[in-house]
Length: 190
Image (tube, rainbow, N blue to C red):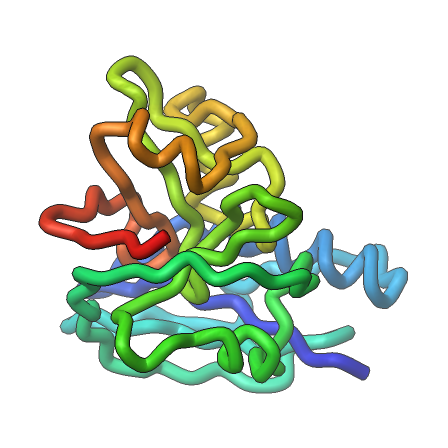
């Protein structure tokens, strides 16, 4: 049975966006294992009172383990667009196929699938067109921050090709740990 995981931000005693992690965890359990009884992650985790932590919950049919890892954000300045047919609809614990795509001479990759930009190896992406923040209509993974921002109307869905990058003025990454983060002084290698 394939294991999955959730990464939950915990800072100074506060657990962030648990509703969205519960939704993805329970949707994955239903779709992959036909488990209808929902899990509430609050029954499995606690919030350390001081510091910034990446809470990593590993699960399949049930929760297997919970880890609290002190978190330091990475600085990302260079991105390379990499073509791949990778399937990563669920947040599987085994990321070996995803990790094989990473290029050591760049800080991060942007994955292009079927001629469309999708995600980086660690985050969903968005581009600003001067009016709206646009996120790929077909990401590899429906991240919790992306889902939350779509539900609020902050993000709009569109297909984005690498040739379109020149039409955008800003680029942002989003995931559970960094939230929505505009990237400054970056280089995207087509």
